[in-house]
Length: 371
Image (cartoon, rainbow, N blue to C red; front, side, top):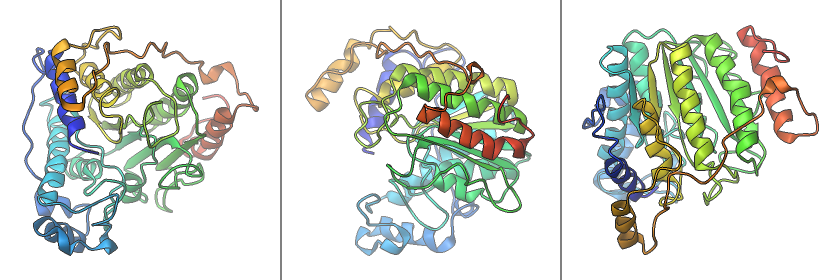
């Protein structure tokens, strides 16, 4: 979770000319105010973060601070609040019609819960941004989490809120943190169906991952008809990631970004807020995946075979002692077989997909067998 992954991503975007494209504006981020943070997070927790930020020695594990996953550090509150401020500002700009799409690859802190830090996440920028959009007049917001880990914190915030649909496609909790996110976890009594979880087996590769995403996400988002689509693009689904157990390529991650872009136009009036998330192979994976995301949001996607600029590769070698990747592709085909081709009961991925469809689809007026 080191800041170097954000530095390398921004530098790659600059070297590729993505930030200089017509219609693309890079804006600074202000730290979210306490008032804004308290729309999601508990007051005692925010105060604990502020105290640990001023003096890391006072971090309290009861709030998830000072742990191996969430060590306290000077300036922690401001850094985490700035990530929130960026996502909120972009979300409100979408609602006001000042931007068509917004990308905050620093965001996607989906494990943070109202009263504690978790899984490298201090404040939940996605949840605060969605709450701010609802407060500003959005009637329905859909959230799609593509990280290898279950988006448990964001789901928890809106567990009983029928105005928000959260969909998480992730590695099963039987093999990966945080150990939650199964098909029968569907939301609270006042919002049954507001949470949707697709827990996939370890070892999933491009074709099966893409098949699973496209067998669940577009159907539910279209049925929900949100005012805004928020997507979390944690790239720890990649085969090289040291924490997850999927074997997905940059090419498949690029294909999903394109699908989410298209879905925003189909179902949410084009309003699309795309966030980063996990991703711990910080040279070969994170910068390329999120550069593709920025390019997609600018409506000028990069060709997969685009060479990686030599200036960026030199910087990477100076910084890390190894050269960066030579091109923007892993050589994957990023193709998949659609669910309409039929269900294979011998395939673990298909069994997981069908479990989610059977649990969630009827709650949205969809047929789990045919829609």
